Image: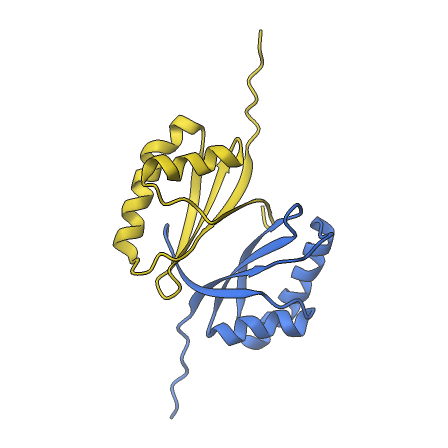
Length: 91
Length: 91
């Protein structure tokens, strides 16, 4: 019997060059992520956005980096410029 | 009588090119930040690090971007490559 691998890693991604973003647009994209993430076993736990810099940071637990990337790609097509596997300083 | 401005903004910074970092080194640098941050009215609320990528993300509340930068500079000299003023998606 195959054993499912359920270990989750943490990832932080950065989206850049999102000129003209605002809270409404970011919230809308995030809702689309939430609708899709379950299919990939991903849990986006928080995000931060900079209107001035046109940037978004998303923090997620995911089985792989590729799974995290797939959520954004399928949800709204706004893929991250970079994805980092991270450990959290404070637990 | 002057009124103190106590409004705090949130900032996310990125430190790159930290080859060879590990939990111990990051924790040590963070302790130095904590020892200095009060002088600048800064509160570093969380951080994440990537050993593989040699990168650290710090999330802070600070009166200004410059104050946040000053904490790292004085604490250990490892200044961020970029500092973004951010809003948090989830409150």
